[in-house]
Length: 277
Image (cartoon, rainbow, N blue to C red):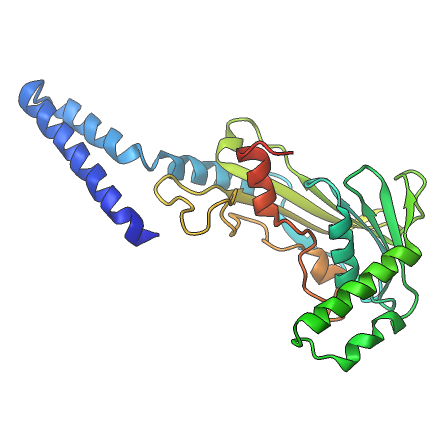
């Protein structure tokens, strides 16, 4: 990115210098005007850095604090309800990914997911036998391995899927919620925020929490390498990953597929920049 932008920065600096020289020679030699022009020239491409860091510091110090905490870790959660309101909900492909990742039939036997159609989908697996065919395959065996994973997950969906409303769904031991945090209209021009809660439904206590404050790409350092991303992947505060992995899901995780087919950064870019639903 630096190599691509250096010539543009050099041209910009030359343009600012030329304006200062022309104003000094033909309009006014006032020191105040010269300082003002140079200040404007410096701030024009960098003002967002200053505003972003001021707002970031404010929101990171504001409640809730701490931004991330884990009170308890659970090795055998048995049943979890994931409610993702940022996408919002899990599509059919996303639900299959969640089964592939977590529904091992031992640590997690029942999984509930809010769908992208407003319904709640519940899947059950009461033993690990369904995943036995994978033992004969190496994880890195390529297409054969992933075709088998896909086939097993589809089988679980076909044989165990039950559909409910949020009010009628069976009670799960734990709930994981993921929501966007609404910042004020000015701050939203520079920052994005979301929060994850892990709730013990037996006590209704929040046993883990994470609020991320993310900043957008700066004017002076745009996203020219990858493109299509809404924010810089490293948070100003909070942790970047989903904390339920540390709380409810240990080394027993089956696979490392993303929870959604479309990455969150791409999804938010499509929604807020491209205007897609």
